[in-house]
Image (cartoon, rainbow, N blue to C red):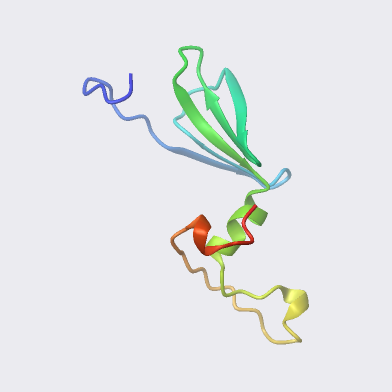
Length: 100
C-alpha cells in the first residue's frame, strides 16, 4: 500500500537499453502488466496492482532537449567543435513547445 509506514521504500532501479532506446525506472519488482498512458510512456504494475515502474520509449529523442538544451546537432554546427558538457535543466513541458 502506498504511504504505508511499515513498508520499506523499494530500491530505485534505472535501466537503459540502447538497442531499443528505452529507459525504465522501476522499483525492482517484476512487472506483470503494462499500459501505454501517453506517447512513448508506459506504466507497469504487479499482480497486486502496485505500480512497479515506468518505461520511456525513444528516451534519447524525448530527453535530449531537457538534458542538453545548448548542444547543437553535429550536422548543424558548421564544423565547430561540439560541446558535450552535460547540463541538467528543469524539464518543464510548457518551456519546450517542440515536445511531443
